[in-house]
Length: 234
Ligand SMILES: Nc1ncnc2c1ncn2[C@@H]1O[C@H](COP(=O)(O)OP(=O)(O)OP(=O)(O)O)[C@@H](O)[C@H]1O
Ligand SMILES: [Mg+2]
Image (tube, rainbow, N blue to C red; front, top):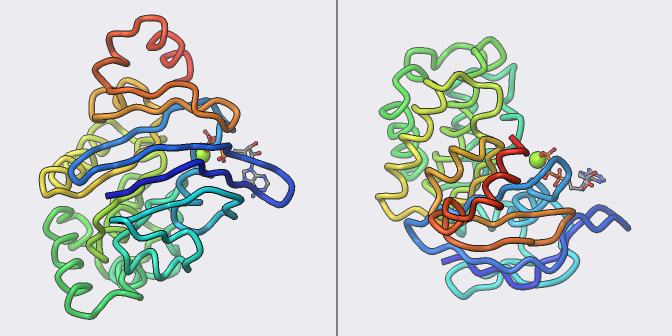
């Protein structure tokens, strides 16, 4: 579904990621692991069109979206849960979800919002409450929910578990598991290596903007030297 070849991206003269190639199939979870500054967020943001792509290609179902706008990528089935959640604090829960569907056809947005309220009843209860007054866990649910309103085919999630209690993280991951079963492709960045290894099908390790290890989560788990160095990161 997603095929990325020789992707390089950065900020002005700074190259944050170099020559990355990877792909994601429908119903597959791919996790990026790496130290702070390795280029994980830059990779995800570049897929969304939010960080400048220097070279390479990004294909969705065979169509190159490299030069398209963020809005066009959302219409093409991509959505992101950004690092740090970035909910709109002064808007209420429902308004945040509407923002998530702003480029999406009204009927899809409506069923998307209904779906979010079904999987996160706590958001439904707090639909009129300002996002800034939600707990950290509720804000993460809202950030995830906002990305789901457009009913993406490929969901991109940056640091879902950061700073959250395990119970909330479990709740969010249960939703990702359901999406996977429904054929949604998922790209994760997860600082919790153990969780990444347990939920992902495929693992990619980034170091200073380069892909230094690629393989299945099973191969990663069986590679003692690799898991030891990865555990040291989280
Ligand atoms: N807005 C920016 N302007 C300039 N350089 C940036 C910017 N954002 C990130 N970088 C640089 O790009 C590189 C990769 O950063 P990135 O945020 O992608 O790393 P990361 O793997 O997500 O790290 P973390 O685990 O801390 O979130 C770093 O060297 C960083 O300093
Ligand atoms: Mg990051």
